[in-house]
Image 1: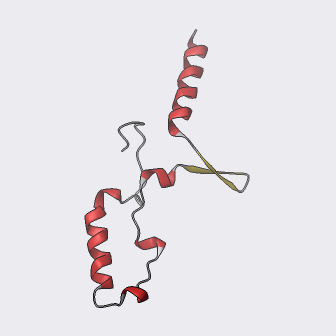
Image 2: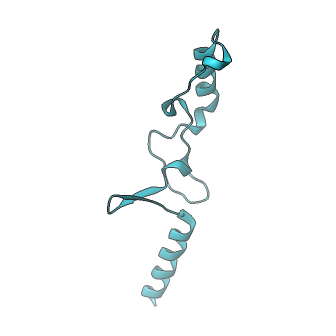
Image 3: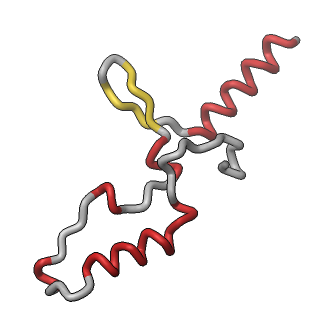
Amino acid sequence: MSLSSGIVASEDVNGHRIYDVGDALLSKFHGIKFSEVKSERSDCIKNFSAHSKVKVRDENKTVDLLILFKRIAILKKVTSN
């Protein structure tokens, strides 16, 4: 859960396991020459900001969660008056 926005992340966000992921990568690369090291995207840390995108008309759009929250709050305030 993001403390600044209050939004709960999905299951694939693994930033809290950075030590475990790094340790697994190091053990995977142990004994390999540096020039032969290859890493995949699936091996990397997936943080919350990487998942703040939505698909609109087959196009990925980045969502600024703070701006979205402010707009919802303003609309809520205007409609309640």
